[in-house]
Image (cartoon, rainbow, N blue to C red; front, side, top):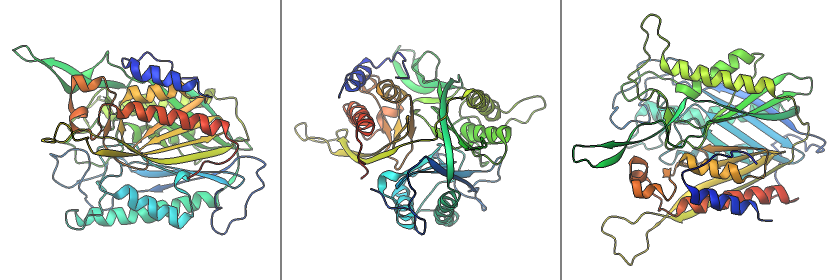
Length: 446
C-alpha cells in the first residue's frame, strides 16, 4: 500500500480502505508479434510549440494571442509491449483536451496505430500557458485550428516512432516528496463576518506531496525515460502572461532531461490537483529583475531535482512487466440544474476512466480535474506498490470533488458538473478495477 496520508475527507478514505479488502490486442501494423519473454518499450519526443501566435488556454479573461515563447512545448511517448499486449502513454505540454478534442485526437490515434481504447493514455500536464485546442471552425481562431490538426499528425508520428524504437527494457519505480504544491481553497471573511472559499492559498489544507517516479532503461543500463507524477495545477503564471510555457511541470520535465541527458525523455503527469496550485500562483509573467529566479523556474527546478534524486535512488528494476488495461466511460450523477423540479432526478455526467498496469506499477487516468483527496484515497487502497493517479487523461469532464466540500462551496464546486456522490463512485470503481487487473490472468481490455 502507498499514499498513507490522513485525509480531511474521511468518507472517501473509508470507502477506499473497504474496497482494498475485496477479493487480446492487435499488434502494431507491420510489426511481428513478440514472444512475451520480457518487457519491451520504445520512447519518442516531438516538439509541439506553436509556430504562430495562438489564443491561450486557462483564463477566460485573456483574449489576445500569444506574443512569444519562453520555453518549448513537447509531447512525450512511452510505448510498452509485453507479448501481444500494449500500452501507449502520451504526455503533452498542454492544458487538456476540451471542446471535443479528446475524442478527435483519440479516434485518430486509435485508428491509425490500431489500438484498443484501453491501450491509450492521452494526457496533458495542465499548463495554463499553452495554446487552446479547438476543432470549432465557427469560434476557434484559425491559428488554433491549424495547430490542433498539426498536433494530431505529430502525435501519431511520435507514437509510430516510439513503436519503431521498441527494445527490451527494465523498469523500476520510487517515491519522493515535494512541497511546491499548496491547497488553494482559502477561507476568507468579510466584514459581516461571513466566510467563503476563494482561490488563494490554504497552507494547512490537504495536499498530496508525493512524487511518483518511474525509471525505464535499456538492458545495458542506458536510461530512456524518467516518468513522473505530481499533483499541482500549471498556474504559476496567470492570465496576464502571454508567453508560451510549460509552466512548473513543463519546466521540471526539461530540467530532468537536461540533467539525466543521453537523449532520455521525462514525461510528466498532473496528479489529482483540482484544488492544488503552485506555491506562487497566477503571476503576470516571468520576473527577470537582476538576481531574481523567476518563480516558475524556481518551482520547476525544485520539483525536477526531487525527481532526479528519486530516480538516482531506484536500484530494484525488473525486465518483466505484465500489461493489463481497462477503459470505461462512467455515467455519474450530475448536479441539479437551476429551476429543475425537486422530484426530477439530475442529469448524469460522464467521466473517462482508464486503468492500466505494467508489472507492479499502476496507472489510473481520469478525464477530469480531480481534487487531491480523491487521488490520495485511490492510492491508499491500491494493491500496487506504485500507483500513478493521472488527471486530464482521455477526456475533460470538469471538476470532480469529494462530497464533504459541497457544504463549503467554492469555485471547484460551482463549476463542477457532478453531484456530491460522484467522487465516491469513481473511487470505488477505480480501486475495483485495480484489483481486477492484478487478479485476472486474462485481459480486460475494452
